[in-house]
Image 1 (cartoon, rainbow, N blue to C red):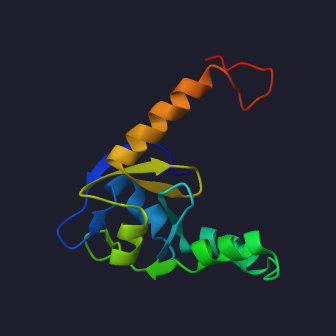
Image 2: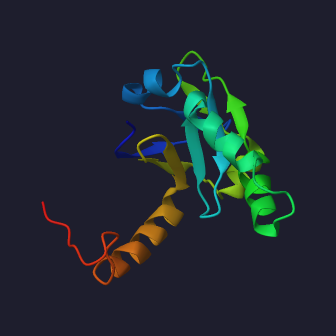
Length: 146
């Protein structure tokens, strides 16, 4: 399970060094898949976790305009990447542009995968979300308690 939030830096070549604690689990099948998301981030999946998602998206009707855009975005941008010996993942220029990644990025655990955000955009989206948290709960009328 991938969890936690880590601020990282891309190197001059656009490589992301995956934190040591996640390297083995993320690349256990030898490769990962990196793709774009409409929220402005990238999604980073172990290849085995991506396969059923990619298959499901590809099975959507190509006659449905909304489904075609999901296919174009998620499948069209998907890149299979083998991390190098130091556990770094090369993020292509196309994906860096799509997610407007600068040098500093956030790696946000989502259970089965990670989101990769530009730090500035992440801070902006997080601030927006936190202002809405008090007015809406994903659990309906239930409230969160620790």
